[in-house]
Image (cartoon, rainbow, N blue to C red):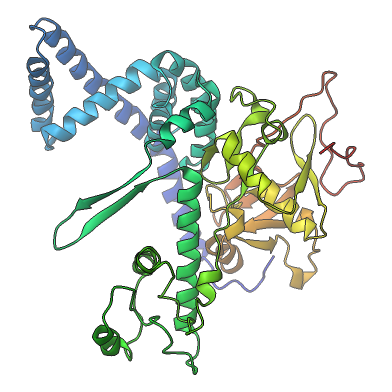
Length: 476
């Protein structure tokens, strides 16, 4: 543990913070019960509108008027608009009719509105007759988890329970890819690209990496290349006069603004002219940046043996986002030169070790495979965007061992280092975090996406780093 904390709480501060936390802990179930009571009341309003509309002639407009009238009645007493209230009523009806287990967990304070909303949104891909099973499993999945952490698991569950395979649905959805422009106010427009998830995530990741390079370059000490290119704020659609006008001005763009400028530069000129390192010979370092996407592909999916999403061994996962179709996963696998094999325990699926045909940083690979995201409770920043941290400080004698390492994003790494939040490893990748008020939070490694269950059962998983020999090499 770091004994030189920059942030320390006095006894009085900790006592008051504990009271605040206790109040929040007590209010969570009370708020849940009130919110669900309101949802059930809104669903009753929806039932009234449905009952009245059935007595009217078969006119869509007449039925719509009933719903508008009922929504306006509730909107008047809740100080909102009838349009917004009509949407809330529609959502409440779906919660009551399709997700009673989730609603009950929310009412009891075991989950929050955010969890219930995530369940409802993830379940929309399922036909109504398949939502009961999804509701039962999803509600339990949410207990004790942050909304961000559980969303990808809910996505996977919905894919597994869908009567049609993800490959079939993706093939149909891919036909609808498009780019559209929506005019906004003040001379602005919104450019929307509907793309396969893998491509969209890759584009976003590359823009983020390039924006980081621009920010690093502008924060670096001034040198002979300080005014190279248009790194001071220009882009491909700026005139020479504009460039001269801003040549001596500091680059004060936000990350979002830089990402937007680079996107325009790349699409309009096919090269990132916002690169501050560009020269007359071609693209600078930004042009060499490639998106980094972490994909978990089960063996059977890779070999094309089984694309059934109901089987846990066949769902390929774009880590930190959503499932991807098997054909895309196989195409990605065919384009790489290095294969990394993850050896998992046959019962728990816990990652035991990794190997590769090339010697690489095997320990870092194992920890990326185990953690998959920042290990502070509730954080989902992907491991490829995090730092490997010694749980017990290296400077104080902490070993560089997988039993003393985990991924933390910069925000939570700093918080561990400079505040009174403490953490220790319990074995098997399980972390125990302790807050300044003494509350304990247990963070388990993400559930594995691939499990092979032996017919004769199996022994419990050995502790990582123990003496158990790895399984025989896989046949691929």
